[in-house]
Length: 254
Ligand SMILES: NC(=O)c1ccc[n+]([C@@H]2O[C@H](COP(=O)([O-])OP(=O)(O)OC[C@H]3O[C@@H](n4cnc5c(N)ncnc54)[C@H](O)[C@@H]3O)[C@@H](O)[C@H]2O)c1
Image 1 (cartoon, rainbow, N blue to C red):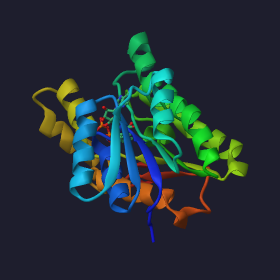
Image 2 (image 1 turned 60 degrees about the vertical axis):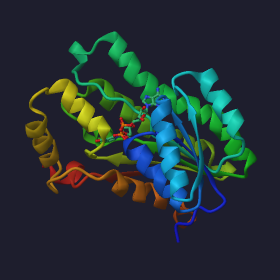
Image 3 (image 1 turned 90 degrees about the vertical axis):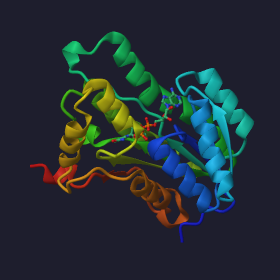
């Protein structure tokens, strides 16, 4: 079960955190993994780890907000079976103190970036007779997270985008789903704490951990395991769905 041998997967933001864990796991299950990340060195590092473990892959520097760059990357890759729209950025703020440039940046990466990759990848998936798309949403799309106005807005768009794509390409054999993680311990969280709570990182890490009723953050590998299931042939009956993986964040934080 959960074999990806012979499949080609593109993972945006594959140089760090959840994307890295997905890239390593998919390569272990036999996929050829293409990492697209704005951080060239980070992508190259994950590719080296894949190769060291005997896997196959490639890494390209790519800013998903730039459509021409994204198109060129996908054209160089050729036929694909799996697209994971994972690249994302966060921002802390409410509607009235979110600056225009911060709003544009969050929407630019999390929403337009996903659109740019869909735009480039769907013709390739169709050419290949179908495939799977997985978008990284968030619990913020379901219940919002305090002071994450731009981020919650963006992830809500990602969830609606998932439904739209699932509906429009059903006849083309393309499945499209999303995952909504609660807090996952990645550089995303560490960077957020360092930037917003300097000197109070440990205290805030503990506090953020406890916002999951299960009492901790997820490990990136736990999200990767769900991604593997959703992108495998075993999930052939699943499309147009969002999967929370959140230690009870959505349903048990009454
Ligand atoms: N970590 C969490 O708690 C959490 C929770 C819910 C959802 N998510 C979502 O999961 C995804 C991955 O998060 P993570 O925690 O692994 O983050 P991360 O910061 O560890 O990794 C994100 C990667 O995306 C890349 N990236 C950023 N902007 C890019 C751009 N314009 N073009 C290409 N690549 C770009 C970064 O270089 C980085 O390698 C994001 O979409 C995030 O919103 C994370």
